[in-house]
Image 1 (cartoon, each protein chain N blue to C red):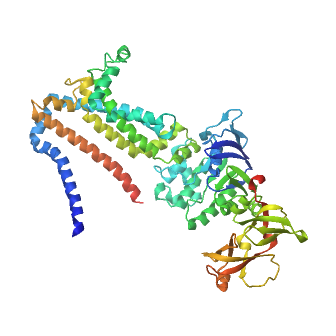
Image 2 (image 1 turned 90 degrees about the vertical axis):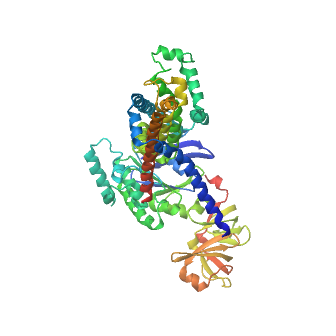
Amino acid sequence: MLRIEARTRLGELELDVALEVPAGDCLALAGPSGAGKTSVLRVASGLLRPASGRVECGGETWLDTERGVDVPPESRRCGYVFQEYALFPHLTAWQNVAYPLREMRRSERRARAQELLERFGVGRLADSRPRTLSGGERQRVAVARVLARRPGVLLLDEPLSALDARTRAAAARELEAVLREVEVPALLVTHDFAEAAQLGDRVGVIDAGRIVQEGTATELAAAPRSAFVADFSGAVVLTGTARGGPNGLTHVELDGGGAVTSTDRGEGPVAVSVYPWEIAIEPETEAAHGSTQNRLVAEVLSVTTVGNRVRLGLAAPQPLAAEITQVSASALDLHTGKRVTATWKATATRLVPSETKENQ
Amino acid sequence: MRASWFPVLLVLALATALTFLTLPIVAIFVDSSPGELVDALGEQGALEALWLSVRTTAASLAIILIVGTPAAYLLATRSFRGKAMVVTLIELPLVLPPAVAGIALLAAVGPSGILGGAVEAAGIELALTTAGVVVALTFVASPFYVRQAMAAFAAIDRTLLDASRTLGASEARSFARVMIPTAMPGLVAGTALALGRALGEFGATLMFAGSFEGITQTVPLAIYDRFSTQFDSALALSAVLVAVSGAILLSVKLVQGSEALGVAAN
């Protein structure tokens, strides 16, 4: 079990976090840059001392500002994988992995380092210098190096962001496997919600130094407690004013025109969130039919192909995004300036009070 | 045709600079035959001066490296109140005229200087001794090393130090195992600069330690001593200094060149 509580001021940022990660679990902290994600890892590893706080891991107390305990970084058993991997440029891959193994005899160190490199499929690179390795290879060496220390906790800072798109998918799968295998708590930080959802057993959304919501990725996406979480998890956020309507539904007059219905309850100023892939597009003139309650006339602002999908930027008149298949996009003959109707179900419409601060 | 005068101007400027800078150095070797050079070097006083220069330069470099490396590391990795002031004070000897440096040393640790009594009580004699030469060389040469070493340490990605700490190494161990090896090209360049400056030191040594054959008369002082009476001998010693300085410059280029090539190869 890893337990962190920390309060400290970092320039403009007021960091105030408390979190717990059971052994074998991975908590992914997701948030925009400058939210304080990396600072949480630095507090855990002892590289940053908070004004007040406690860090406990596996029954050991690493930091307790009240009792004056502050174990130096070298004595905390943290496996910290840095964003750019921080391999030592003057050492070969195996020497990097052997760096934490200084109690062993030289021949043993070499053998153990080789074994770890083999495990990650980079045994043949043992004598290479970091600068000759690709991003994916560097990441494997970096992970092998922290595991060599038999860490009590794994700390991963944006583990995939230094990789190109092609390497990323494979590296993510490998990392998932490592996280499943290790029996220690893992704390991962990322700016990408999808990455957090893939690698974390639980996801904590962090904004301006605070964890605003924690849960499984599905829970966060399905029931965001604030517009920030909704927006961050990829949803479209519209603002408006809610009032109770007939049949237990909530009617929302959108700022700037248009109205939508939601099965969530709400009253007064609200943020309406919906995921782009829940939105369907019809020709403007199409009459209402079927079960979709929400219909907004919108103008197409942009058409972007992403793989086999097309992402539409719409003005409805608030900005809206929709994701539809390539096939539908060509059938509808979509182009910039065309007017269409965006539709989605009331059940896919989440309402959260628009004053996010009240929700923290 | 209209635009072609500018490249010509550039080439002319380079040719002028090159001629002006290399002609005097070439002249040293042309003005005396190799045989004369060797004969002049064989003379007792010249050999003594060379040997003294080697010993004092080596001693002052040892002091500069041992004290300067950790000091530069501290300045490069910590921020504290008044740091800019400290750096400026350390760099001051760079712009100090050598004669002023000599006077300053006399005023500080000379026999009647502010710390003269304490130095004498400790049983150390500095003025007009070989130890005094080492003090003068260290004073003028150390800023060259410290500045360069500071820049080298500051250029290192700080996460390397963080990584070393989280991998179980104390700061002292990280310093020795990660920071120094990573900063090595910069440290070598700084050492070469300090070495060059110490080897050529003239003014401060003359003022502080005097010019006594075999005791404080380093090569530059010996050259000055001889040039009105034994010009051949002065020329020969100058040739040796040129050769040594050239060798230092070349070896630095080689060290840094191999680093640069290593990076370029990838």
